Image 1 (cartoon, one colour):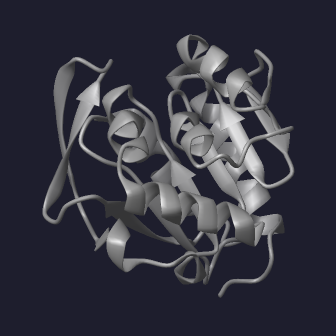
Image 2 (cartoon, rainbow, N blue to C red; image 1 turned 180 degrees about the vertical axis):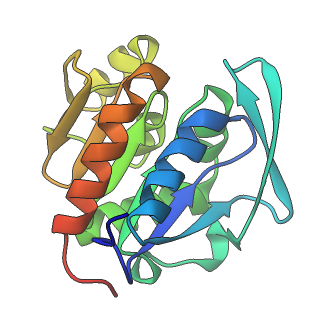
Length: 185
């Protein structure tokens, strides 16, 4: 087991409706590399996960509320998808404000599937080359992103992937990019 992320704190911004595998597998890769993670959400308690957007898939405990965190608290940010999860996040002013503030730091942000919706709402992807689930690509283009159909795209501080099928490549890329970032806070 490598420890290239020892001492790094990674925030995982997610809400009810998160696609379980898109939170679970990257978090496992981060833990395997030595990072500490915290699930940040809109309400205390637990968030409900889904499989293929429709099927209940358990829950994840919430570590901190987005209203109570700062970009300074984390070295990197992970934003998993699922359709409902980012839709709830982009409708919440605290979540959008946190994402904007985090993007403004230049620290790495990894998004997968529908996760980039919140980046579009925060207006932080103009001129950024990225990928996503096919159904939100028009939204990302309208927000100014240069959208491509690739397994993993790395541009500036952003790491993006299309779907759960891309998780092996996405997990490897986010660990590598998070390790290249500044030393832990």
